Image (cartoon, rainbow, N blue to C red):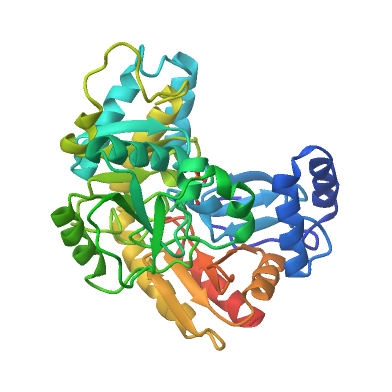
Amino acid sequence: MTGDDLPLLQTEVPGPSSRAWVDRLARHECPAITARRVRRAAALGASDTDPVVWAEAVGANVRDADGNVFVDLCAGFGVASVGHRHPAVVRAGQEQLGRLPHAMGDAFPDLRRIELLERLCAVTGLDRVIFGSSGSDAVEAALKTARIATGRSRVLAFTGGYHGLASGPLAALGYHVKNFRDPFADMLGSHVDHAPYGGHWPALGGYAAVLVEPVQGRGGMRGPPEGWLAHLHAEARAAGTLVIHDEIYSGLGRTGRMFAAGDLKPDLLCLGKALGGGFPISACLGTTAAMDAWGASTGEAIHTQTFLGNPVGCAMALAVLDVIDRQHLVARAASEGAWFAEALGAVPGVTGITGSGLMLGVHMPDSLGVTRRMMARGYIVLPAGERAEALGLTPPLTTSRAQLEAAVLALTECM
Ligand SMILES: Cc1ncc(COP(=O)(O)O)c(C=O)c1O
């Protein structure tokens, strides 16, 4: 398996050992996770509770427990933007593991963390950073910062928005899959309003923040109409409301720009997923004005975590940023994405393409069925959108043209 391989299936998918592993998983995994998987399998009409168990991955390829080789057209939830197991990222992680796998977050930082702070600020044009371990952590930090900086508590979020499932971001969820939110509704407060994504929003006076994905991921891989985000920025600025860009999915080159919002600089920016090249690390970046509202420490850090800015994650993130530069992955996402979108749009039965770069929604009537048939041909794809109305395609930015061409052919056969 080289990373540039086309699918090579040894067994039918899901294969026999995948099934055995899934049984073991289902015995011990909390049904919060397994039950969702079962529901999804039921919706897909699959006979088992999960399609494949991953054993190894490199580049755009994944090998499962039965030896089947897949092309991962979702980059592991958008994490493997530089490809799975990129050698430079692995090397950086291994070197750091061999030297210092853990430091003491806010109390005793390590060198890599300082380097990553500087690097992220240089890349984003923002001034201050709060690290976290997940996307949820970054959104949580942004919401708390907006509260502190404005003295206000109301938040405006958007329909179709997905920001993570910890309590803070869950309160802002605009992705109306009921079972994410409903069991906890009375624990989430009533400080969040939702406006239609790409549509009209209420007067912003009184809001601490607007929380927005410049291109929505789970909500359907779609951006707002031209000019919408700039208009939102202007009104927010006039109202003293902070703008939080959630670029956890769309950031770091995925849309063919380093950040999907282009030159529009937010007050707060959330990054995660691809940042650590597979290591769980995230960041909330902000302007000095927003972040310094936290004030000087009077002893305890009032926002911190045990693993904040873990050294291995920081070392791997620095390597990811190097790879994005060195391999010109932003330009590659733009050019390959344009080719891919055009080719996908020409597949009979496809009703529309949304998104940009290598963050594409491929709309069609039976996307769940097509997801399953693509899987059986060796392509890992996820449904996207609130009613799973599209295939969400977010392959590694390094995926070869031959792999993309073969995926278009496979999709044509699956329709
Ligand atoms: C835009 C966006 N924000 C936040 C999150 C939450 O990240 P995590 O699952 O790492 O908490 C996600 C995850 O899919 C996301 O797509």
